[in-house]
Image 1 (cartoon, rainbow, N blue to C red):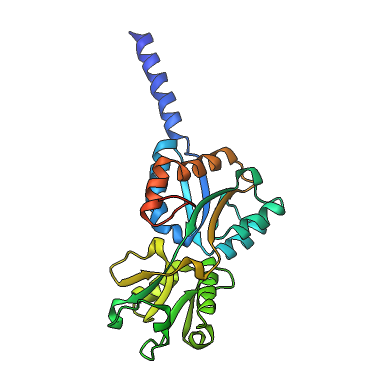
Image 2 (tube, rainbow, N blue to C red; image 1 turned 90 degrees about the vertical axis):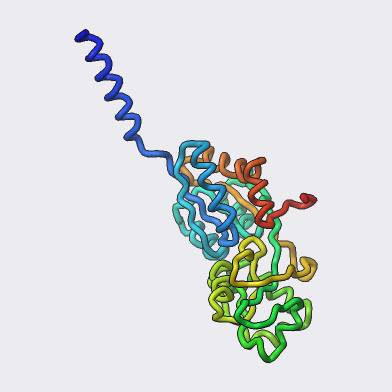
Length: 252
């Protein structure tokens, strides 16, 4: 009996020690258009792999610069492939892990408080539309694409004085949601919110938003980063991504 008590105590102690071990942590820097989709994907990945994901959302251009300067990211989900390609060329991201995970889409969003739903970019010229939000095209791919769409339509010079720049596409959406602007050009993936109405923008008006991911070379857990990429592009992740409007070429 004494031996049994000792054995049980040892097993309990070992179990407690195992339970006290912290979960592996994966730090993911991701473009802010992924906010809604990743809020669903991340918890599922955590449960499946027994890890903790620290999700940091923001502007792709800003993240690329921070990673280049040593920011502690393990994986970088960019809204534009050029930023990933630049970091791969510099040896900062692992080229073998580079993967296309989506092609982004733009929509023309109208605040419900504006009193009219815009259905065409030319309606941004209406005098009643005083402020138009886009993400900052200097470092935000969706802002760059919005600028290209306006230029292609010959609207840039006329609309430019009305523009209000969001730091990233999520902040741009918030400007429309709160009525701080009457209209905006935002990502389809975050457009289904009750405060706005929206219509899709013709994707031929701008260069494709090829959204690409890669693992950071200095990551202490590259295999976990690869697992997360595979999860996002796997059956469970793709189902969620497609629901938020993210498609791969040829995917329906």
